[in-house]
Image (cartoon, rainbow, N blue to C red; front, side, top):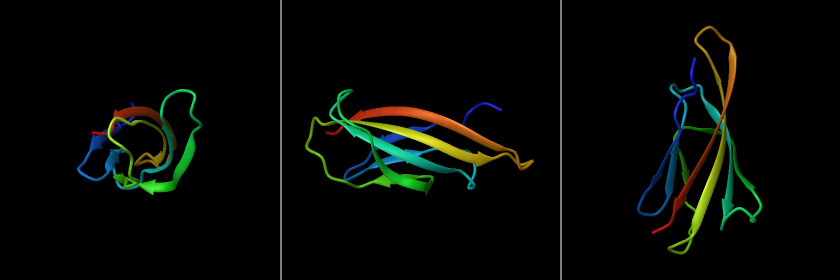
Amino acid sequence: MPAAPCELTLLRAARRLSFGSHGTARAHIFRRVGGEKAPWQRVAVNAPSPFLDEDVFAPGTVLEYYVHVQTQSPEGTARDYSHLASITVT
């Protein structure tokens, strides 16, 4: 079974991360602000999809998210997927 896609959408006052193909998906979400030299910070544990990051950042700020999805198949088998996404705040 292929990994479910992860979508990062810039909203008016937040960023929405959508992941997993059904309601049992949970994710550990990490964020890095300002590029590769910045440290990763955990922003959510066992977050459901979609996850809203409503922290405020200045326009032009580059945000990166590492999403580690934990889910179960319909047969009950545990599956883990990882996604990396980035976006620039406007």
